[in-house]
Amino acid sequence: MTHFSASPSTIESLPNDLLIEILAKVAAYSIKDLVHVKLANKEFLKASNHNYIFQHASTGNFRTLRWNIDPEFWSFMGKCVNNGNPEALYRSGMLEFFSQCREANGMKYLKFSAQKDYLEACYVYGIILYTKNLEDEGVKFLKICEEKLGFKMAHCCQRVKEFVYYLWIRNKISLPKKDSSSDWRGSKSVVKNCCKKNKKLRRIGWNWIYDDYYGERTCEACKWTEEVLKFCNMISRENQRSERRESGDILLGPF
Image 1 (cartoon, rainbow, N blue to C red):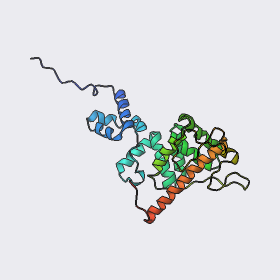
Image 2 (tube, rainbow, N blue to C red):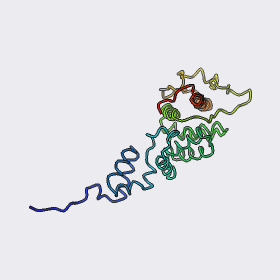
Image 3 (cartoon, rainbow, N blue to C red):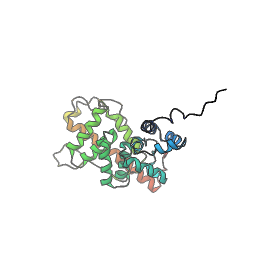
Image 4 (cartoon, one colour):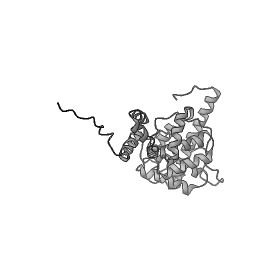
């Protein structure tokens, strides 16, 4: 009987660059799967520490950022941020800005993520700029989000809201106050009368499922001002909920 020497498996014989590319796709899909792959052999473990993988890894499974005290987790997040991972930059920016009240750091991370066209970051960063009297710059990022989604902004709003739910909101933002002749009236709808009559749909809270919920004739100024106001109101509500948690008035949610 002829005996054949053992040969490496097909995947183990792949060039290192190709193996790293494969592991990056695994990491982009599931960090848990990447952890299992790392345990397979030394070659996989070595390749899994490449910077390219941290650049593409998904942090979507880590919702409880605020409460995670595992040093290995934060080491992983730090590597993702340092390698320009847009999702990690966005999540770190949200945590820094809204939970830790470190606005400069938060804005820096959100800007880097938005510049990589990460849609949730474009949305939040654009809104924050708008509230800081940088309307033109803010709208530029909001329009990136709008165009990428085919004007289905509601989907992006919902994803942002779902992530904010898992943060402890301590920092609020609001529309800048205008003079008495302005059409901006406190926390109520800021859409001008000329645009109100053209609105096709009424919206309640953040449960919007329509593609064009402003109406074709709503002017740009009214559309973006109201979009910003909706986000500010949502952050304010989450801030109140966080304060009630701290005071013990309500139990922690499913974190």
